[in-house]
Image (cartoon, rainbow, N blue to C red):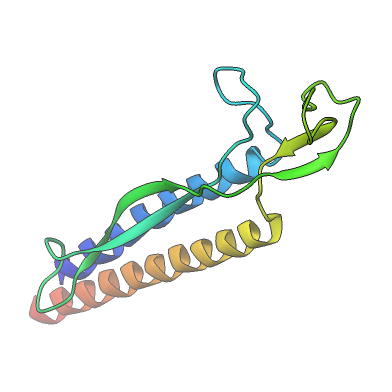
Length: 139
């Protein structure tokens, strides 16, 4: 019974990390510079899950985050010649490079992660109730 709690707990941790990546993407929706101050738009992150057979029993497995990847996508260019981060020379002069992040996709992913989180909380509650009932019957 405790393996069921471990499996659900591993899913809670994984979905929390996914929500952290999504919130970082949304927070940097308009970021045109990297941490060093260079003109380089933010690259969105996404979480990769992997089954974790060390968590669980009887053929069931938990989940873990195998990595947080950077989505190497082409930035979105908007013509804004008076913007301080506009490209100064070349064929893209006057354009500003923004991160290629779709806000609706991020919101949908956040909703999916939140629902998964809630489902695992529900599974934990049911497991706790079943354990409580079993101990009450045995006592």
